[in-house]
Amino acid sequence: MMTHWTLGVDFGGTNIKFGIVGSTGRVHAARVLSSRGIGRPAAFIEAVADTAEDLARSVGLRPSQLRGIGVGAPGPVDVERGIVYSMVNVPGWRDVPLARQLARRLRCRCVVDNDVKLFTLGEWRFGAGRGAQHLIGLTLGTGVGGGLLLNGSLYRGCAGSAGELGHMVIDPSGPRCGCGARGCLEAHIGTAAILRLARQAAARRAGPLRALLRQAKGRLTPELVSRAARAGDRGAQQVWQEVGRALGVGMANLVNLLNPERIVIGGGVANAWPLFAPVARRTLAAQAMAVPARRVRLMPAQLGNHAGIVGAAVLIWSQP
Amino acid sequence: MMTHWTLGVDFGGTNIKFGIVGSTGRVHAARVLSSRGIGRPAAFIEAVADTAEDLARSVGLRPSQLRGIGVGAPGPVDVERGIVYSMVNVPGWRDVPLARQLARRLRCRCVVDNDVKLFTLGEWRFGAGRGAQHLIGLTLGTGVGGGLLLNGSLYRGCAGSAGELGHMVIDPSGPRCGCGARGCLEAHIGTAAILRLARQAAARRAGPLRALLRQAKGRLTPELVSRAARAGDRGAQQVWQEVGRALGVGMANLVNLLNPERIVIGGGVANAWPLFAPVARRTLAAQAMAVPARRVRLMPAQLGNHAGIVGAAVLIWSQP
Figure 1 (spheres, rainbow over the protein chains, first blue to last red):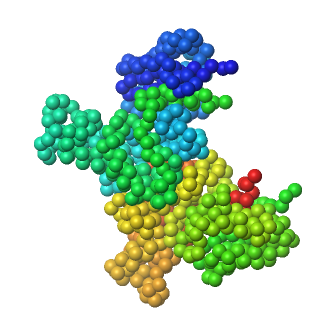
Figure 2: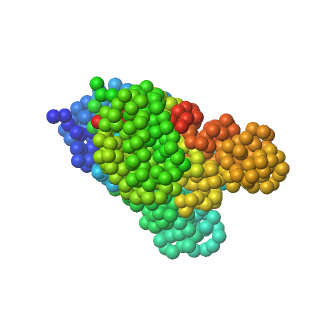
């Protein structure tokens, strides 16, 4: 019987995560490398080769004996041809036939997919989405990403770009988005929007947020906004209310359109979930139609940092 | 070999359309009855029975010899169990097991589905959507409805309600919608919104619109707004610009999310397509992401009044 051991790789702008995934979804051997210095294609392939050697050994295999290697990339990917079109904020990636290059170097099966799609696949198979037939994965961070799992499989659309829910316009007079449009969901709840709102709040009145910000020498992060909100800062709390409201509108649109069983919410900003979940739920209930609103469950992701690695393995296993 | 001849029935608030559909999608014998008097379940079933007898005879068959009878209903339907949960603006329909009742009465296979889903299925198989794998059907009228055809089959979601794109919020400070929410697509481009905008335009200045409205004794319709726009009425033209803009925002969201090959636009208001298509296309191009925007084609529906009847037959043929 063929082994299940698969190497999952999750390529991020800051870190690249590796892990050997077993049949139960457990990550057996994990490693995190800084993206610095190995971000470009040739260096990345060498880093995967070295790491595959080490991690495969930990389960008594050579890389070529693994079931395969799956890579999640932060950008648009042609899954069938294994091509990374580009990576958000990572230079040097332009129409790179990564799957073929990796397969040649490592002599094993390699697949590449968009990182949010793999997050969705991982959570569906082993995390908060287990057992669902219709699931939306939503990641909150610098970008707001989405993966659609419909009828029990990833839905990609005609050019593989389906799921770009961060660029759903929810208010045409809302803030300008990095994509050029105005009022996208990402322009309301992406990290940059959260930090902008929080700076305004800190400027408006004294309180825990302003104190924490001074302690941090002005280096504001979503975590800091969360801490301030938990410490009772009214302005910081209002930031999360605003995030919850915009997210609720976006999710109501998704629920009306796709009638999913679950929406699984992950990404760094999802750590503040308890702070914005109540408003998000209320807004969803008020805006969505009754039948689909009753059926959907909102759930925080369960696999933490491993969802992408695990999803990469699930993708390998699902190949014929 | 089993016959293809199938009776398609399209239940509308004003008319009920019937037609015998052959294997090429041609409607062989058609009939239109007023919904008045046969709108309630028992009377409707008798009307279908009578009409089936007449129309089946025109192809030399008895109703029980047809391949089946497919019915499109304006409301939520449980396709698997053949239950009509309710019909918009038609009293007397509450959890009616229509498919079973019809099958018992007519002794042939019967299926029921939502009318916009059948419109989408019909246009996909024989109309503007031929050959597409990923298609969105969009109907413009009193309501704004949607059907999603993904990976070559109708997508329904977990409660069968998927496709409610008329209730996508595109502007939270927009007009109040009949569903209770604010700023839904339907609240911007449904017939009521078009007529409200047109009345305001007619009140603001004299011109063809005000003249036509006086001729029609104040009975305003979307057709009249189209005629006024074609006659050079600036206010009426602006109404269609507004419709095109809102539709473009809604379609940009759909394109980003679902990356479809085509969007097929039908329904009564789509007769004004040339008046609002340019703005809709421009808005879509400006708001949607480049990759999916390049791939999608917007097309007016091709089957006219027959799309629902034909879609009902396609649904019958697709049953195992």
